[in-house]
Image: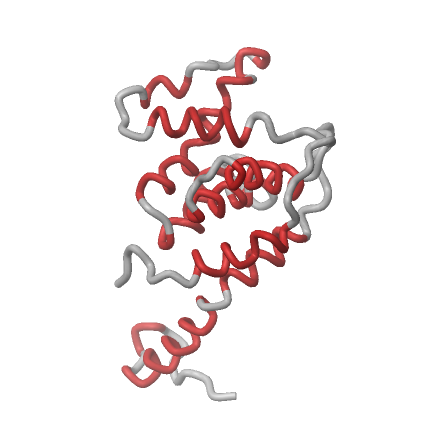
Length: 185
């Protein structure tokens, strides 16, 4: 297999970078498949919850779909907690960074901030500030993020809820990640 000529990026040639660019674009085109594979493995739960991380995500996305949300929001809802596994202390930002190139500013903001907004439901039980979200009160997506948490996140831990399977959402995920990125070089 062909390799680049450099061992330090500053010594790379135009040919090296054109070669890598081709491979990186091919890799990026397969992002949806990698995400779906990762999601399918979230079958275990954080100790104490009644449903797995995957089931929570499926319930959230099913609720968004049933409520007539856009495909972009359904996919974002499906992936909103994808960071729990690898970035438990900043899972919202992790999920938002994965989605950022493919979703609107509004969707990105909702996913990025939902962790702080979710604190409304539990922080006071742990000696924290349940109103931490109030610092965003004047933000244009404040109410949308409250609605996201109320309708799709905080209520999706029900072992008796009939969620749609991951397979149902696969075409949506593939379409969103096939979009031309909102921001490029």
